[in-house]
Length: 264
Image 1 (cartoon, rainbow, N blue to C red):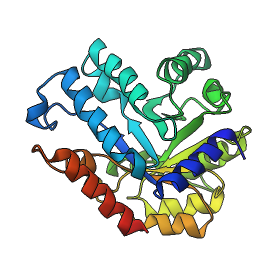
Image 2: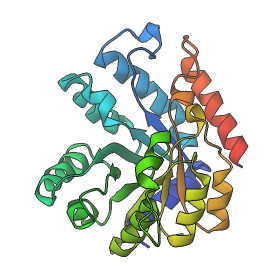
Image 3: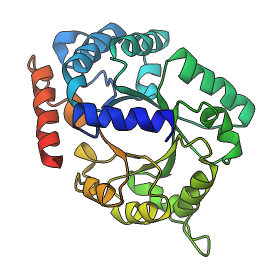
Image 4: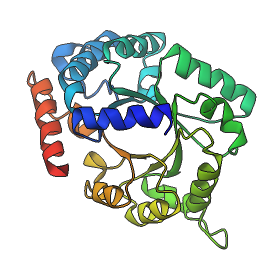
């Protein structure tokens, strides 16, 4: 078992939960009493991390929301990494993917600069181009496969003859998983795709977005358990913005507790 997969499993056992909480600081939704700007995002998300980490397996900061704040947002992302306990998986949702030389720089920025335990990447330039990421054997690399957004099926379900495009991606990631640290992103809104992927590569860890605000079901975790698989199930807005008032942190804790009971 790879060092990353071992850490991932340990975090799920520690927290008693497969939950991964997305950190998406939307200025329009951060409770008003925190103020505005990157410092408001930092204070809000630090309180979220401190309150929730004992009961979740991972946090997933989405770089786009931090980049939107400019250079101050990137500094917030660095400071939040310091606030996150090392027992928790810090999964940077960057969806990077370019030629190999450029990916070398992306990997340094994310793994060294941001201290990420794992990252999301896109496969359009091929598996060889992703080597700068998966070469870091102690880091997780989650490849976009069957994503939760509705329009994705127009591309990901393209029939290649013997299989669909998302199935081909699953096969290629399975073959490239030489260090045992690669995984797949599969939306909970795509239960048929999840069934297929669990059949193709049950050994690959999964990141399952789409539950909560996007309407996907948490019942998919039972499918993963039945396949003896490992997965993080992501929730973002439904937890972060469970309340817009001064009880927002308590409301987020209650939402996490409710979701954990639902999946137990």
